[in-house]
Image 1 (cartoon, rainbow, N blue to C red):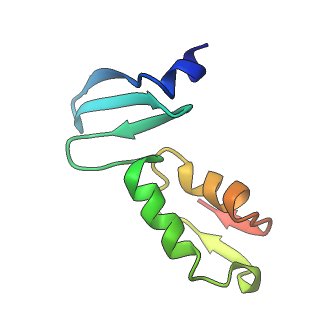
Image 2 (cartoon, helix red, strand yellow):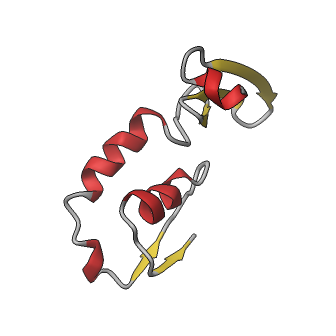
Length: 91
């Protein structure tokens, strides 16, 4: 039910972090979105921009992908599910 309601009414929980200030985890559109004051780490608007950029890459010609800084792991989700990339990903 929580996932269903996240499409209608997103919920946000905040957690203090000595390193990153406040971490915000928002359950929105069936996904957990991780944000800090200065960055979006998973899904969210930057994920959509990344996916637009990935449409410009000929991924079927790419044998290996090296990810530096994975955030919440949403990049791998996009590569595997949205773009059906099945080759090597090193993170």
